[in-house]
View 1 (tube, one colour):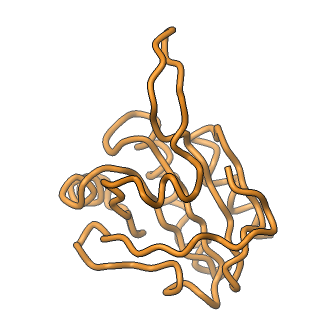
View 2 (spheres, rainbow, N blue to C red):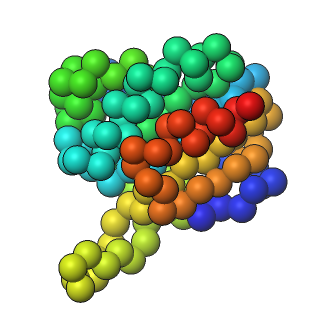
View 3 (cartoon, rainbow, N blue to C red):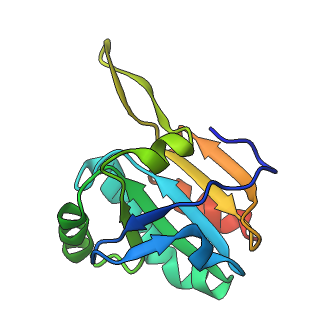
Length: 151
């Protein structure tokens, strides 16, 4: 996990519509950048839907929301459409941004060890500086937690 007070690594990734999105596109506003393991899974769906429900409040507080996983653009599009997600999902199939943000880690699941995305959320300020960082977040609670961080 990256430390607070450091500059967020720049990136350019395709969104669920295949349009390229960059960190610099969000300068001048707060950004919730959350990394999740996989579209359509129980925890990731809970987290995405909760961000979706609170999305108008994030916008009121001047914050954008971006979800990032290693799923494809097509997978993200299905996820967005199935759950009516109002925010941007970014596809990082090469894991470049996932690794730049230090969220690709060894995970243990039922005694089996594998590599994967550790659910992590960053709050990035208007100047591209990480002001809060949370790893191993609880999927269902994370959106409300991030809304509270905005004050």
